[in-house]
Image (tube, rainbow, N blue to C red; front, side, top):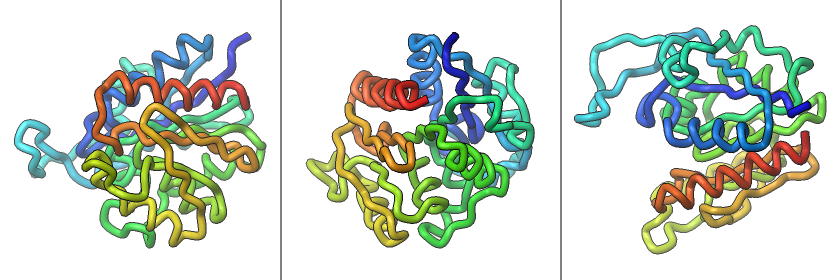
Amino acid sequence: MGKRVALVLAGCGVFDGSEIHEASAVLVHLSRGGAEVKIFAPNIEQRDVVDHLKGSPTEEKRNVLVESARLARGNIQDLAELKASEFDAVIFPGGFGVAKNLCSWAVDGKNCTVHEHVNSTLQAFHSAKKPIGLCCISPVLAAKVFPGCEVTVGQDKNVDGRFPDAETASAIADLGCKHICKNVNESHVDKANKIVTTCAFMCKAPLHEIFDGIGTMVQEVLKLA
């Protein structure tokens, strides 16, 4: 029987929800790994709604669960219903929705708060010693919830202009966690905490390299599950 994996989304679209290519890559790699996947998102209003053509906020109001249902092809549940006992692992794709809707990192940085159901989900899987996979900006969730853990968001310096958000690594270190520098096609495994991370779109890289890096993260999660 394949591993049972919960996928937690934060909306639909890089600037105000889950990064679509990352969510899709996770799903493809999980499918290839024979996993049984169920998708969840919090039933809350988005912090903001961004016009992805203009790159500017709009006056619209949208719901994170409803928007995430677009990526889930309608087959999705409220995050409040997720029971860690029913799964072998959990994975969080990235996108600004993680930093806006799942926590307040986009506004508060290392002083952010994590949404209660996101926090309880992470704590439940961690307490059960079940693996947690995170990519792009979502490793900050682990850094906030599990002081002392090891994660990667790529590099801690803007190497060749490819890591414009490298200061995130410093904020992670300020939280008492260890940032591990990795290339975009790699992932890092914190064996003690069973946390697997990869930088994905935190690096300006060709899509296939991001896809491959997410693949290593998913493979490691399934190995630990």
